[in-house]
Image (cartoon, rainbow, N blue to C red; front, side, top):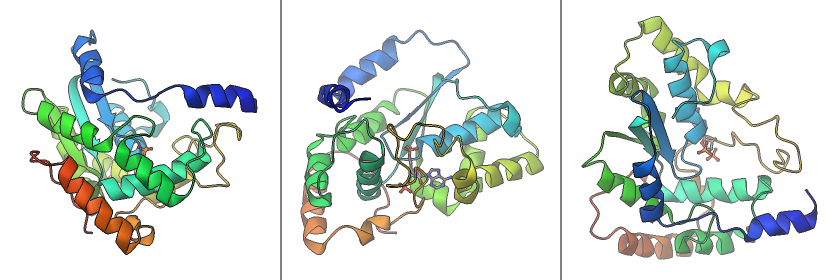
Length: 243
Ligand code: A3P
């Protein structure tokens, strides 16, 4: 893409308020066995998709295709600070995004919801509320890091699938960070360099919880925490920030 074409893409607002997006989810004509996977960017979309693909294909990685979507919904949340750090790196490597500026500038935009896909706060709270009325398996990246097998088993139960122990172990291995980092498809290595520049940052970057501590200054952390409290006021949503 030329500089001018990229500038045009960067002008397109990618974010819509949660209520508008939810209206699209509700009006979608899903087949009974459809499954919707939803996440805010950089929360482990690729990870949970790979797990579900493996489950649907009984642990056969050759058969995995990425075309499933709902009736049942899986939502995956990740703590806001790690999402912000991961998103900053993604903004730099995925050229569809405008220049994120400095980390401090990007963090300000993230907190204000002025990033692609809008406000993290709005997204996680919105889906958290919807799980009261809909069949949503609400998962957390931090839980998946801590005990991936238990979380895969939750997905299996939710999908009504029963797989042999050895198949579950195979899925566990195939969807580990080390394996997915080697997986060219999961790592989006087929994307042309003008779209994703892996030399700036690999897609499978660190895959850990708590990396935010390497980026947030004490002052940024204080401002962020106060703003977080304000944004999440009235919601019972909780996630693990202190790893
Ligand atoms: P980091 O940038 O913190 O490393 P998404 O797929 O929603 O864009 O999310 C990408 C983030 O999920 C990246 O985070 C990536 O490394 C992480 N991720 C992907 N697969 C993972 C896995 N198997 N285990 C742990 N983290 C994983």
